[in-house]
Amino acid sequence: MTKPAVAVAEEPQHYLGHRERLRARFLKGGGEALADYELLELVLFRAIPRRDVKPLAKTLLARFGSFAEVVSARPERLREIDGLGEAAITELKIVAEAVKRFAKIRVESRPAMGSFSAVLDYCRTAMAYLDREEFRILFLDKKNLLIADEVQATGTIDHAPVYPREIMRRAFELNATAIILIHNHPSGDPSPSQADIQLTRQIVSLGKSLNVAVHDHLIIAREGFASFKGLQLI
Image (cartoon, rainbow, N blue to C red; front, side, top):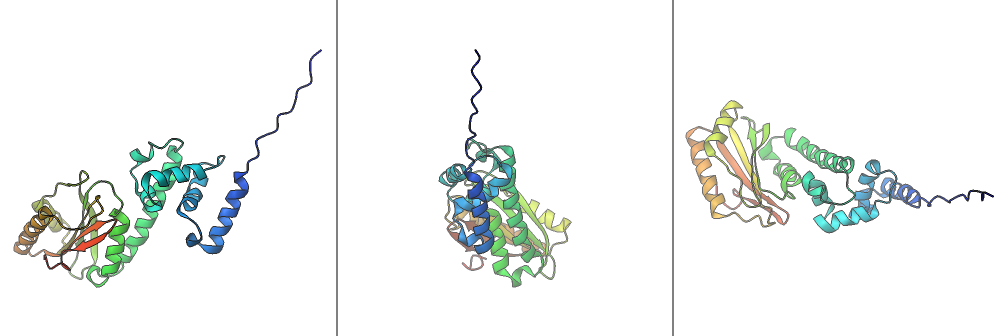
């Protein structure tokens, strides 16, 4: 005689109530009401709808250090995390790009040299948590308005190849009359190296001969920033 089938109870989806409570806390108190791992959970909810993502969020923080460092991490490094698929990585990179574009609006809408804090905020958003050195240039017009923001070179953890003549060639193509040089130090220390100082002097000298002003060179790092103009190195 065949025994009747026994119904198997589904595993309670306890995380569903947690998600609703977390969303409610965010809507009521904003991001400041949430810890970094909870904010990461909110980002991951859309990409991973049927799983408790709290352990994954905490794993990401343990690997990279902070919310900002997680969303800034390169996709290839994020793929090293078990359980983090392409959809979730896309969500994280969307957040990073949205933050960068929001900060950039403040730079584009006002003269760069009249809104140093906006320029600095944008640069820190775009570069402070990168794990490779990147050399970026802001090209400005006669009113110091932003014409273009371009990454000139991407390198290793402590070097990005930069060529002064290529910088000036690009300035002429864009009809820029001034530039701001920016690069990051993945080590976390923004102090200029002798190589940084020497390169900057070469660019400044070449710019003077071509009537392209170098307003500043900013070094961005997790622990702060250095301004060549502020340090009287320009």
